[in-house]
Length: 290
Ligand SMILES: Nc1ncnc2c1ncn2[C@@H]1O[C@H](COP(=O)(O)OP(=O)(O)OP(=O)(O)O)[C@@H](O)[C@H]1O
Ligand SMILES: [Mg+2]
Image (cartoon, rainbow, N blue to C red; front, side, top):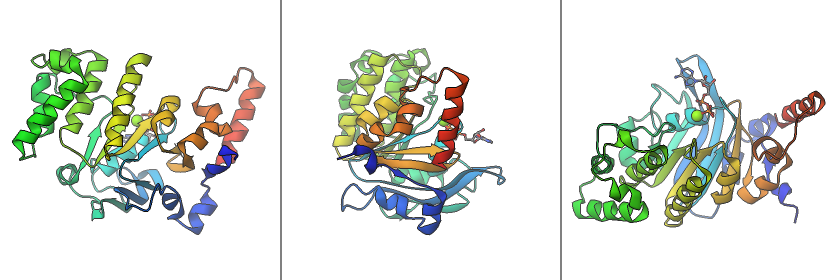
């Protein structure tokens, strides 16, 4: 079977015909989606529109990767889901396990079960590793389970165990990323959202962290992974979507996306666009996506 045929170009025409079609194609199983975005429009200062109608499903145990170049709107999408932009989304809806979360306060979204690892890792530099991890579990009442989760984190990342009493601001970049992910896990989320977890990390460490993400995912948690590192993201994801200019221009099974010529060229570094002529070719092909 031609894997490329599995990936779907989501054009304006298709979206206009059926705005829910893109999200339905994300169906991994007959199960209800955990996270559901429906034609979400959002941006900044009520004027700037960054997301122009984004629909997406994340099912239990599914890892969905969102790829896209700088400024495509990836972080805006995660901030919108998390209720971090006032009065956004201006259109569309966000639900978790059927519960309406559109424009809910961030605290309520967090309690409902969405955890967010921000792009710069969001450290509280003066808190120790142990304090930061406990902060992740602050709204949980099951103290003995929190302790068990803490021990699990230390087993998963022995480096964090060794540095329990160290201020998190003094950790290395990789250790901070481990802490950021672990802190998010301490809230026992239904869906974990990660914004470019591989940024600035050595390849081996990226592999280690992605292997952990995959393990968590197998346990049933939904993962929404935003990445520029398309190779690694598509290697662990089940489903992938390409965001350009605030719209999904391509989506499909991760394996199919890896074989897609556009994805290879723009995100997997397969292209050798050295000459002006080739660059022109790239631009023309780029237009055909939209
Ligand atoms: N706080 C803000 N106020 C106004 N505009 C913003 C704000 N944050 C982001 N933008 C704009 O929204 C657009 C999308 O930005 P966003 O950060 O979502 O992109 P991204 O896909 O995450 O990019 P990157 O890969 O560089 O992280 C950009 O044009 C950006 O300038
Ligand atoms: Mg970003």
